[in-house]
Each structure stands twice: as C-alpha cells, then as structure tokens.
Length: 328
Ligand code: SF4
Image (cartoon, protein in one colour):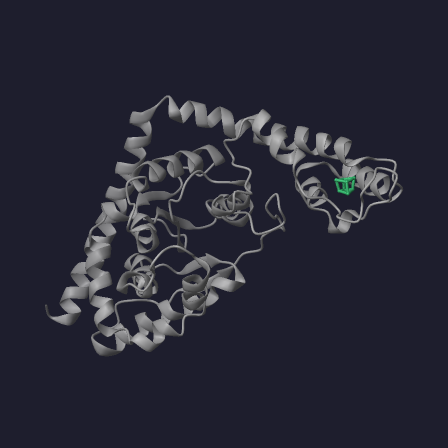
C-alpha cells in the first residue's frame, strides 16, 4: 500500500484538451504524480449535468481525454486513472449524501448561479445540475482523499465537500476525513481572442493540433491593439502572443522580443512566426505519443479497465463502511 498522501482530481470529458488545460491542470498533475498517491478520473457523469440532452459524444470524449492524459505524461503506473461511470458506487454514495445535504448549501454555491446565467441555450434548472457539488463530494470522499488540487476560485467546492463529510460523520460515524484544498498556481494563458481559453469560445489551441493548424490560429491572435502598423512601438505586456512566448520561448528570445516590440524593430508577423515554431516544437512529443496511443486501442482500454478496477476495490470498501455506519 502506498504511504504517500492520496489526492484526487477529475476532468469533465468535453472534447480534446487544449493548452489552457495543460497549464491549468495537467502540468500540476504531472508534478504531483511523484509526490502523491494520485487518483485522476474522467468525470463523465459530471458532463451529463449540463450535456444531458446530447450524451452521445461523452464516451468518445472520455477515451480522447485518456489518450490526451497519457500523451501529456500522466503515468498509468504511478497513478490510478479511471472513468467515474465505471464505478457505480459513486452513484450510491451520491444518493446517500444527497439525503443529508441541505439545499441552501447548494444554492449558495458561487458558481451555480454564474453558470446558469452564462451557459446559454440549455435548461440547467435540473436537480442534477444543482446537485453536482454533492456528486463531487462523493467522488472525493469515496477515496478518503487527503487533498484536492484546485485553483483559488474552486476552494468553495472543496469547502462544501468538507461540510458534507462532516455532516455524515456527525450523523452516523466518523468514516470520512475532510479533504484539504491544495492550491495550485497556473501561469497566465488566454485564448486566441484574450478570453478564457475554451472549446466553446472557439479560441483554443488543442494539444493535438497539427503545425499548420497552430500556425493558422496564431496568425489570427489578437496582439497589442494600439500597435496598428509595424513602425508603431508595441507593448508586449498587454500582448497575448508575448504571454505565449514567456511559456514557450527561451529567456533570450523573450528578452529580444520585448526589446524589438517596444522599439518597433520586430513586427508582429515575425514575432508570431517565432512563437509558432517554439510552440510546435514543444508540442511535438505530445503529438508523437498521441499517434502511438491511437495505434494501440487495446492498451488504452486496458489502462482504463485496470485503473477503474483498482479504484472500484477501494470504493467497495468505503461503501461497506458507509452502509455499516448507517446500519442499512
Ligand atoms: S511584436 Fe509580438 S509582442 Fe509585440 S505586439 Fe506584436 S505580437 Fe505582440
């Protein structure tokens, strides 16, 4: 049995991963996989909370997501990688926790009202959408995770999980530890149009994009809006392309771009070309590994099945304790 502290994190399968996902979550996971006993799961039931009318692609997206994780360097040997819906115990614990969770706790969830307002064209006034923090709590406490890696804006989600665990322990018996929020830092990276990078905004560079696709996307990126002509000095500090340089170019190039932009010696076309080359080079190993996993469908299936079996064994033990504590 691993002596490392256990952490748990998941992603909703909504399509191929983009470089915002890489810098926002995957790179943190890669760093954590040597330090913690990591459980990473594909939250396909969570995808249903908003995509319940069109669940058809979720299964393919789940598989694509696993391939993206593996290609990015998430190791199936070091971590437990699984698909949420393969472990029906999550649904049972969700049901039990929904019995003890007061509705006002869910209604005060800061992201709930925001998302209902922001996600246009879908009726999110469902029990499932309101109750997704309960499902999230079930996912986390099922494995008695010590912690959950989150950005600062997601800390309230961990807090509600702690409250639900505390309430269960108070009513029945202490079964669940209260998980900690492990704050992660994410470098600044925005979409092509400077909004949050998101598939639904059509402003993302995907990890699996070809060099030509990346080049075409970068050529349309918004730069310093004050710099209309090449002879105008620019301000890299407000330019999205420069933020990408900081992530994908070496220090010397970053310094040269900064100087060249401010003095109007470097034009945006040239600047984007250099950044594209560095970005394409950086994603090359990912593309190679993706081709490898795409050519080995049985290997990917085995990774999903083995990881899900390992997770389910723990979930079954937890549910045994839960039923005993409740005498049901
Ligand atoms: S030269 Fe580069 S950093 Fe400067 S405004 Fe153009 S794209 Fe941005």
